[in-house]
Amino acid sequence: MVWDIVIPIITLVVGAVIGFVVGVFYLRNQLTKMQNDPEMLAKMAKQMGYNLNKQQLQKAQKMLKKHTRK
Image (cartoon, rainbow, N blue to C red; front, top):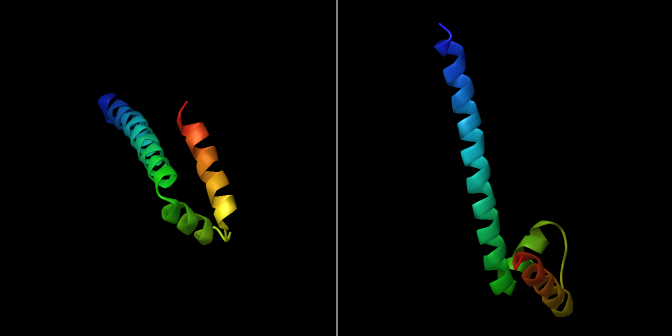
């Protein structure tokens, strides 16, 4: 009877932890791809409503490289 309560709670916690780890890995992977592919970065910015010129795009790439090296 106690296991009817404990098992779902444990499953929820384990699922949340695994989901968080997978999410962080996916986000880091996407940021690495964006820093190497300026077209992908420009596409993301356009989806957010920003039009970046070449100078702004280079600045964004430089900022991504700086923050993803940590």
